[in-house]
Length: 262
Image (cartoon, rainbow, N blue to C red):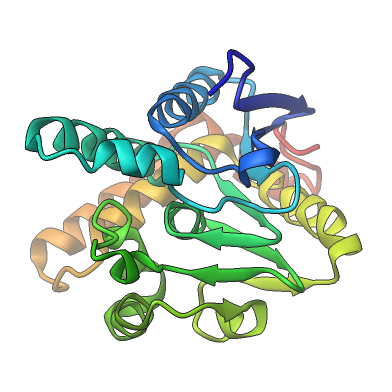
């Protein structure tokens, strides 16, 4: 990869657009891109002025997944090197999935392999008509290991198995049907759709957003027992007692917008 940045961060008001900017390679990943992308996500997470994050791709594709040149190099027999690269990709996916800000995937063109994983890691996904999705790893004799937890969480184990085992591409309509994306729009309407989603997000409180994401991770897959009841009760009690909760309730009673509203 050249010395040019492969990931850009653009502030658009309270939202940060993190864009894969390697169009000549269809925004494919290699070790340098993974490191740069992870650092970009950590930077926006640390910026208290950022209230939402859009993940996008420049050029004809969202992301074609792993760069084939890098994959060939990474296929060396040394397991330690392979494991190091795989852990870096897994860290990227976890960083995105657990980002304490709402995340929106703006998907066009191809979202393959790791690109498919990025879509699953985002809280909300909006696709342009014509977008295509696939996990073709088995056709190369490998598996989509780093992205698998987020794929299963996004579309469930049965759809995940079917797509991983067959390695076939699906279109945006099928992605919508199985819950991979939340909305499909004409290509010329995708930025407007992302903008409307950001407006909806920004009507909520930043602390509440972070707590919602933490709460969903905490309750997912757990039995509703005394411990879970206590955890969920504490979450709402703490939110009500917090400064943001007090401001939100006061704004509602006083028929005004809360301080965080655009």
